Length: 422
Ligand code: ASP
Ligand code: MG
Image (cartoon, rainbow, N blue to C red; front, side):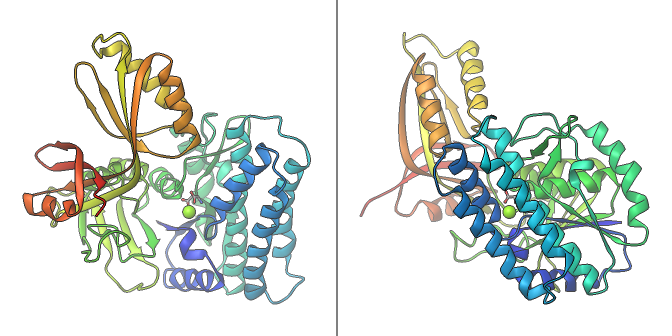
């Protein structure tokens, strides 16, 4: 059997859903489990809605209305019959958010976030599943929360692999026998049946969890790019497709911030030796990228750009050394504030980290660190990582930039830079 994953961009409008059905129809004789994300930018919208509700601003209902309208427009194109059951089912999903909004928030933010944001995936899969059935592709809608079990770390649920594998193996092979199975990415549930999410862009990871538990032959992630490129076309004019990638290089590239695949996706596939394809949903005949076991190194240097970095330097107030005790304290604070480190460097009296400048939680972290350390920071930096680097590639990315911090090992070079104002 195979697992397909379609992200938000692939189903951002009615044409996207039709295109998905075309891709699926060429595989209708295979056993296929299809993981679908929320449509377009729905997750961002629901995230905004959650913030607005939590802070009791008055636009939460407007944002909900926007989400409804957006999906309604897509449904009108896919389901001309306005008595189609899909309308009722989707409306019911949104009612769950309405119920939450009607009362003032009494639960922690991260918990509320998961209950609200998960609706995006529940709605998208409801629409996709009905459409596939309407065009003759027999499909079964499955609630991922019945299969993917996590702890209660809301917004970053940690998967209970044993329980998840057992559920998936008990329930899904039978369903896959004579129909397609459509399910959500990104969402799971706790043992008490509360909805959790696996972290932003987590649908790839969901696909990997299903694939690993079912011993799938392969996973295909359908994207709006031709495959894994050696740089994000957003930042680089001339990019090259990487036709084959080892699991190790894929893990490293995503670890340093390549956004093409969610970083947690590769490991479960590597453990089961399942090939991962990254292909274009636009040019479906394109070869894409194949990720599997291989000892080959990257064929071309690869560049990963992360903008909006903040470099935080942490110094003990009493001029003592940075020792293990400080480091473990600093890391536990990072964890509390949901912050991931992109680059770090330590000297005897100074520990520096570069992180995404995500606003409120970074301010809170700096305040928190300030209680025990002297804290300095620089904003608006860029982090450039080059895998398989040489001097020429370094020179190429440094045009118009000044280096703030540079780290190299034999294969990877990380440059934290500031744009020179000219
Ligand atoms: N819809 C979720 C997000 O946008 C999960 C995903 O797309 O992978 O983060
Ligand atoms: Mg998405």
